[in-house]
Length: 107
Length: 118
Image (cartoon, rainbow over all chains, first blue to last red; front, side, top):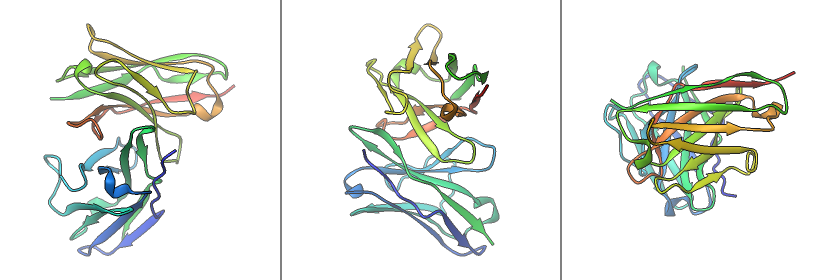
C-alpha cells in the first residue's frame, strides 16, 4: 500500500518560515493536499492540487510537489498557525492516503 | 453553506455493532465522493471508506468485511454500519466530502466518538 512520511515535529519562531515535507514514492506524479488540525477541531483543507488555496485560507500558506516530496510552506508564521498538519494524496488502489502528521510549534 | 453533521457514536462492547450517520446540507451527497475518516486518540488521520458518486464503495484493509458505507439520497445522508467492533476501532469518526476532482476532502464534519470497550 502507498505510504506518506512526514517529520513528527517542526518548530518555528513567529514571523519566520516553516516548511513541512511529505515523502512518498513518485509523489510528484500525484496531487498532494494539506490539512491543518487544531486541538479538538476537525481538519481543515489548506492546500489542494499541490499548490492551490481554498477560499479563506491566508496567502502565507503555499505548497509545492515534485519528485518524491511535497512541501507545505508557511511564510510569516503566526501563533494561530500552531497545529498538526497532514499531507494526503490519492492513490488508485488505496484511495485517500494520509501522511503521518507533523506538529508545528510556534516558539 | 455546506454542512456535515455526524451522529451515532457512543460506547459499545467489543463484538458489537453501531451505525453512524452524516447529515449533509448545502450540496447533494450523491453528486460527490463521500468518505469516512477516523482518528484514534492522540493518533493521526486514517481513511476508512469511500462511496463514489456512481455508487462504488471501497474500504481500508483494517475494516474490510466489517464496515459498510451507504447513503440515502432522499435524506441526503451518509452512513457507516460498523460490525464486529474491536478496541482498535476506538476513534473519532469524521465524514468528509470529496472536493472538485474528488482527490481531496474539502469539507469535514465535527466528528463523532466511538469507544469500543467492555
